[in-house]
Length: 616
Image 1 (cartoon, one colour):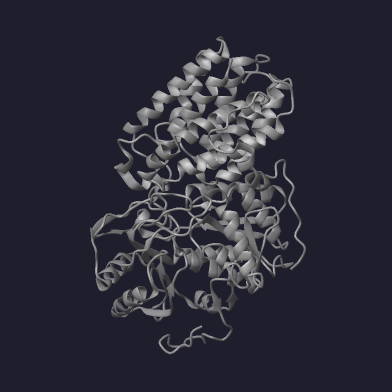
Image 2 (tube, helix red, strand yellow):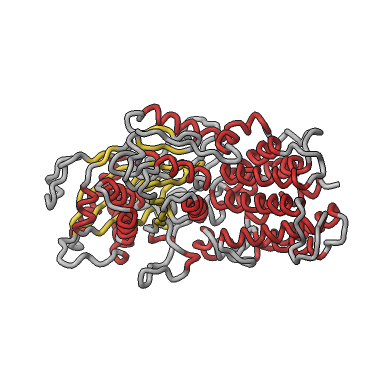
């Protein structure tokens, strides 16, 4: 297959903002930017009385997700940084902008970060009185065991969403366009997801904007079967395949997984041969030739096949094949017209029941959402506020800001190492994401800590604001979890300093005991949000020994106790090398992560160590 050099040079920190602006400029006839959010909305949304279909995910996958916004498809899309989920704040703002009063369907791939952030946004929307449902897309057969009675064998190994996203978005968007209520649109999205399966293969990895080295690689002369769209390792590695052999692998892995054909049906399946970013269209057509033959030999009828790029992986060389088993209702929704930057379907272009070999090819005011911190504005301003890793806490910085600056400096110095650890069984972006989040947290804390040094209320307020900014800028699962850590810590400091009591209710707290309470609260919040437990190779494996050590030293001076607790966290982070991942994306890779420390545990230990060095 083809190879090309790394793409145009980009500034990683501004890449998401830059390409979204360019998209909105180029397709102003179809989409516009969501005010104060990293998202796009259809020029025709919101529409009073219509269910809003809001999708989203990380950058690097265009046309997913922003390219699929427009009449007949999605109403809006919230966009995260490269290969990172949009934050809950961005999803919330984007959904509010699209709300037409009939409820909101949130749809995203089944990745830990997306699940957390879209889930948090759904809770905020519900609290605001907006009826909201969520559908997670799980079409990738390579990423987990098959469903049993409609449910996964092991919830920790739920399948991820890849190119089959398109079918689900299309069906849901068409159902909303024809006037279905929220329950009906949700039912259609879930049904389309249940009828869709995808299997992919990659021949070469990708290089992210601003990076000098590839995020992941595929050994020369080999093909990785089942590799995920963030570089998640596949099911097996084989020699380079011919186009026909590749087509056979794709079909052979999908046929046993297809759901039962509807009674009385004619074997119709919607077909999507998807390019991952670098594979040329002519090459995909050669693959499709054999795909078409194999499907027809199996008694299936390819219906309105699509060959092109729908869910890419930046400049990855590879393809995926998605099939959606069609019934009459799904067929009508798939045929329904739509108009988006990346995909158009014209009215009447596909008469019902036509033979696919002969088919011809085919603004209301937005209310701004005000929050405590305008995190998207903070994200744009953080480069000027904190600069490079050479910047240090200034004499004017108060305790919370100084601690976060120290954490940023130390983590940034280990960014490449954290990325390498994350790439063992993940997508390799942990270092990039946590540095980006900490940079935003420093800027937010610096603007929100006006009180006198040593005032826990001032530090608490700063950490609350910093947590929101970190989650918004970082995105992904790590952004949600680290954001929760900071906000929970800030909440305990602010509440206790305002006359609260110890967790056992015995009286006011201060110093080490106060921070032990904060660590306990952070542990509970992260466990609830991520669904993880100690021993499952996550950041909890470093946080738990930290909080326990801090609690046993509650009577000691804070600086001494904190350093001892940080040392316990550092040892525990190193010990995660002996654990097998049991939660999140890495869990799907089995024993692949064994022998390597968990990136989240290591970054947390670095943060705790840096904060300890600032305490006096």
